Amino acid sequence: MASINTTDKIPNNVNLANDRTLQRALEHWQPHFIDWWQHLGPSDFQTADVYLRTATSVDADGWASYGAVQMPNYRWGIFLADPVADRRIGFGDNMGQPAWQQVPGEFRSTLRRLIVTQGDTEPASVEQQRLLGHTCPSLYDLRNLFQVNVEEGRHLWAMVYLLHAYFGRDGREEAEELLARHSGDADKPRILTTFNEPISDWLSFYCFTYFTDRDGKYQLKSFAESAFDPLSRTCRFMLTEEAHHMFVGETGIGRVVKRTLEVMKELGTDDPAKIRAAGAVDLPLLQKYLNFWCSSSLDLFGSEVSSNSAANFANGLKGRPDESQYEDHVLRAAHFKLQTPKGVEDVPMLNALNEVMRESYLKDCEIGLKRWNRAIERAGHAFRLALPSPHFRRSIGAWVDAPVTPEGKVIPREEFEKRRYEWIPAEADRAFVRSLMQRVVAPGRMAGWVAPPERGINNLPVDYEYVRLS
Ligand code: BYC
Image (cartoon, rainbow, N blue to C red; front, top):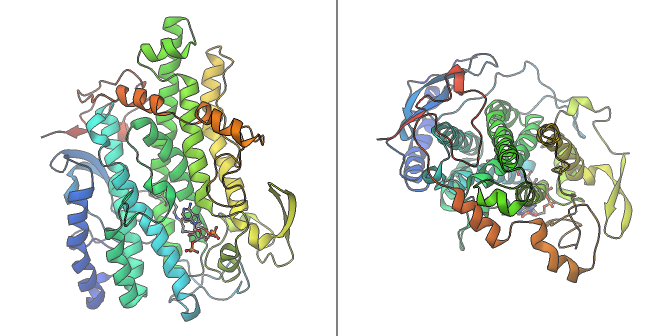
């Protein structure tokens, strides 16, 4: 396998220099990307030196190099995991046949749509987070934000490479459109709802990287199974980068919990008003943020019953995460008991795959909850954080707009409307969280609402100057 050539104008391990047409097309797109980054990437930090890791090889063991980089000079490029010799399709009606190195004509538009939808989320998240740097709780956090941002930028490159290399003129046009839609734009919004939600405070950022990036993990894992081998290979490498984003979310929320518990101990109270007055996030408020971002991210799996997901699986375009853990890879005879507002329905398993993925995603989400709750329990409090029911506040699928509490209880609509802001942040809650967002940039210092991390980046101390502001 060709190693990553980082000295090329576009770093890559796909031998770009041997395909002049593709290279020219991507070099044409590159300045548009940089222009987008300058205007819609992190606002005002383009000349700061940021301690970033950059991919230099696709090996699981040693792919990263660390160093101070100004973000517009980050080595964005095209990195695919090594090919698996004689790879075969692992699921669906064509199981056992050789994986595809080109896009079969009959699946062209569906695959393009899937790749565009995936690609659209990457720059969307950078746009959502573009103002956060101004209110960073520490240089450590600021650096993590920027690491996440540059990697989302690289994930955009990953999808743009596929569009350019395998979808001809349509693909090139779609690549331009990926820079033309914008998060929250009234006329040209991003494709999926969650990616149009503003992320204007760091509590939302931690929740987003915990819940929404985890959807990314699941979607990328399902593409890693794809019969379209270049998609599988690019997603396998993207997953190695994704892990850090979820780490930022899990440790971020953990640090908020830790700080809140310290304040509760200092004050000798769990009274939310007193905790807020002391400048920390009370646990019921954190629960509202978890409810908001978890329910929004659950929509990203699509409808419970979906002919799209059935066709994508049967045709080999999109598998289940870790497909090899299952026994039946064809699913033509399997059924699924689906809970709907009308009762339990028996549906063909193929049509219920979005729900199957959503269920395994929720199990994965539990891991952080257990850890945070252990800290709360150890501090001697009865309060427990919980994931909301998958039927709560859904905007997609069988439970759209159903008046369901976070505990999963169906209640009269009027009561639901009246109690809505017991469960998700009200404007006053958001205003309070915003009021906490004061910029802290002295090395090693932390904002008062979040505890320091247990360790720094790449074995450096927590008080290292991770971002040198100019
Ligand atoms: N919002 O049969 P349905 C990440 C649309 S995150 C708006 O229910 P399907 C990241 C759907 O597009 C991972 N529209 O569902 C995280 C379809 O429209 P069309 C992103 C929605 O198709 C953090 C229609 O409703 N990757 O990487 O089985 C930072 C009926 O669809 C939504 C992907 O999503 C929604 N929430 O599955 C950075 C993978 N849900 O096509 C990055 C690619 C559904 O009829 N996408 N719709 O016009 C897919 O695999 C599928 O499109 C979905 C939906 C899983 C999203």
